Length: 369
Image (cartoon, rainbow, N blue to C red; front, side, top):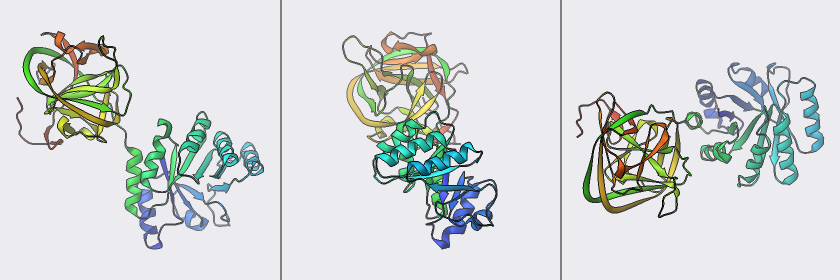
């Protein structure tokens, strides 16, 4: 679970109170400041972190986490000794400017409970190295980010990212945006077994291939359907084909009018997608993950209509390219060629109860057929 630390030191004075209130309300993990007395006023629901170089003073809270800047091996050795001696919340701040300080950051992240890293250069390669070095460590790695956009990049580095990000917000809105960004996780979906009712050759039409920036797993695909209330799990071209190479980044998704099920319970028409659009990869067990479209490939091809029904009697429709190499997934992640489907065959799909307007669920009367 990712977490946020808020740095109060550069927050404009007129916004500081609102930022603190927002941080407490949004339940950020920690607040960093150079004033221990101001930190002492914060509730114990948030970690109170004293910035490097600040004097602890008499009014500091007992559970204060004190960040100490580490610039050499001797300084790191002092902190490691304190930690081994029983100091519970030993914390280091390492400014990575070259290879020696990168090695210090790696060692601190391996050995100490908290390590904040700041990087001089915009490349994320040093962060990758620190994340890899600290992978098995029980301590927490926090990376300083210039803004929320950089924080998003940081939490995705090596797919794992640092556990925490440290950001200096300019307003309360920045705090809420940061926490929401860290909270984003695509939930699992409930998949159902659909039974094929009919197969029909429809003639020429436009179909869409979705080429993504991701390598699909063998049991992954996308949920596509003609109706907003029902979808079939279309598999990627990860599985071998006799006459062409595999394209594990591609879904031969369906006719351009079709809906594709996405994050936040929203749908998009295939015709709306473009390079950079976020979409949802879905596994045969219902797991999901957010991925990005690399391009859309629309071409005229013969089309095949598939009608299926859920156990509750909900009709699901999917129109795809009429070709043997187009595939969908069945129970147990069975790979099924669409031109070989017949009445009674079983497919994996998802049935939604929502009606939709511009892709969003809405409580209104709507009939699709």
